[in-house]
Length: 222
Image: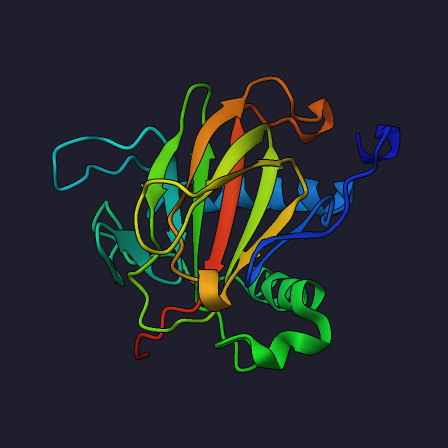
């Protein structure tokens, strides 16, 4: 845990517009979010697997809130044909706090951050062995920053460049409670999860695997 670190982890900026804040969520907030994710994952419009246009199936399980994400767009109808669950005020409040923590007085200098109005969240569950290939979040019509919250098992997160899936990239370890915000020049950087580190979650969370919550501003009408 954070209070057992020999060398405490500190806030860092691995790329322009990208901010990593370790241990941003305390244990109570983490437990609250895990419980909320369990409710959001229930049908209808619950957690599901995603088949890509190429025919492959993603190894993560996913539920969307506010807008339903599919490759490569958004709709108001979930994968099971039912209306998508509403975007929770809890996540909107957390995301606004996250931008303030990440950018501080410079928030007005980050594209889309000053007028941030999140309306969609994607919750991914990474069971043992799951990963996610390098990709860009380009399906939104707004270029506001993306807020990412980690729960459960740690992972190796790969932050690439904005041009290609190849180097240069940087690998970060994201642990439960960590905040990652990417916006500004790195808003459309390729990124993914190389691997999850099984068994690294705090047993008190009662969570097997990793949960990642990304909060976004869709820029879509309505």
